[in-house]
Length: 183
View (tube, rainbow, N blue to C red):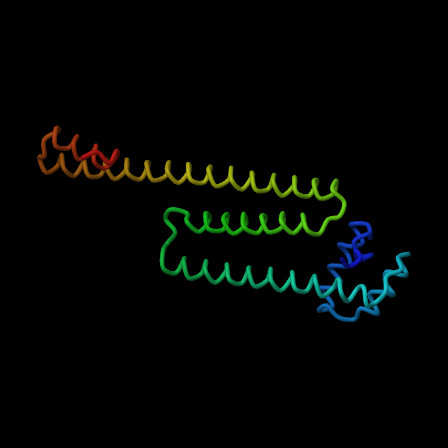
């Protein structure tokens, strides 16, 4: 098994800054990044940075491909459906859940320190729970909106039926069918 990269031993804020620089530099110029780290007091070889950068580049490209795919799917969906039932939000929640699950699995593989891995996995698990609660709330809200729309439609139909002389008993049956879905 290969040795763990020294990059993972960097303080989180330095590693985050390194990741930003990697993306900004197009995953190139590792010599300059090694010099920057040396100035910060960390001695990491260019070749080690390159290996780390290539892994990050693959992760970045995969994430960008996922974002592009999700965006294209969302555009296609919205152009074909006005999203009356908030299916787009639900689809986005599912995509986020899948991404969080991937992150959770990757953390299990990458972290060699169990305490750190447990902390990160707990954060991802909380994010998944939050997404679940959001999805449930969104579905409840959508159901309430549909019920309100059925109620309004029933009122309009009842008024029109009364004007046309339809009996109250028939109006009541029509109203029940519209509002409750009863037959």
